[in-house]
Image 1 (cartoon, helix red, strand yellow):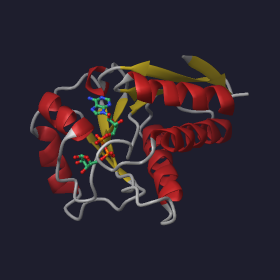
Image 2 (cartoon, protein in one colour):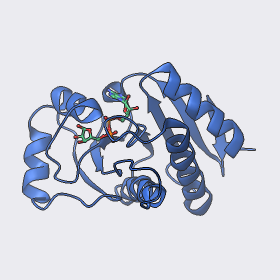
Image 3 (cartoon, protein in one colour):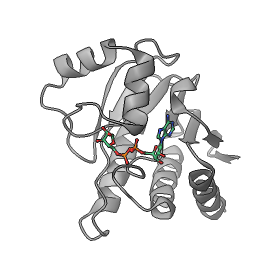
Length: 179
Ligand code: AR6
């Protein structure tokens, strides 16, 4: 699925984000940037050790929840990996939506600051961190749409969803938000 916002594209793909041919791939990291399962495990496996070496060297204090940091992309096809830290879901009353939006917004800012035309993002927080997928989809997409309306960049914002359920949740939210 693809919609145009302010002359730029918002796309949904189902698949493995590590295979995306874009300028920047977003990792669903933890605040210690310590590596883990899910997207994080897949990125470090396919990208090789240089990514973890760079995060350890440049960001020894990690990254706060609701923000993101950038490194090179090792053996991946992308130029950069942006390590975003979404919140752990704990019922919705602990600022989770603002933190999740902040993580997505920082990814888009870093992409623009590094002249990336295209970025691929996963459903941050919607795996190990248990954020309900319908709500995660609305936060991710509304943040991207608002950013594109304000900044007109990057040219391509692609959400890459691992399974059919996540894709369906994002498709329903995009349909609603793009009207
Ligand atoms: N490509 C695209 N999406 C994926 C892939 C993939 N290769 N693998 C999983 N997903 P998660 P979180 C989906 O758990 O919830 C890590 O251990 C997955 O189905 O990767 O932010 C970190 O180190 C889900 O919809 O990230 C942190 O400790 C979404 O990506 C913690 O997990 C996010 O799932 C972060 O948890």
